[in-house]
Length: 182
Image (cartoon, rainbow, N blue to C red):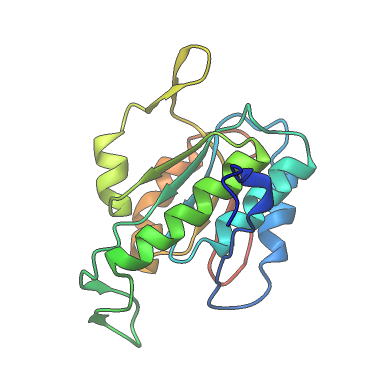
């Protein structure tokens, strides 16, 4: 075994997804060029959606200037999913979070992305950061606008958060997990 250090570019990050058509997230991120604010995924799970958003930001030359936020509480907590599944637990454990974060932070370093993870429910995030999120990159700034937002978390909350997000950035793109853009 060699004692030579391994470069982060020699390690491949691995992400999972739970559905198809994730290319719409790459397209949404590309289309967000010129729109002020952070790129956000609400409901990170295995990180596959954020990977596609990051790919679009990199492809359109928006990194490292545009911060990327991931919002997901993990912790295997109960939450209301929708009218069909009602309330219950999924496999969103802290172990899943830990594995996902290793891959996400590795990928973000490889792609020169300024990534912030918030282990919070979506409503808690917007309550705690109602006036914005402090971001540190050469200087402190307060990010309170969102250029592209992927709702892949509890779908009932997205209706409650829409008014806060619609007043965010002119031209912003909102993507629901059913992959419709507004």
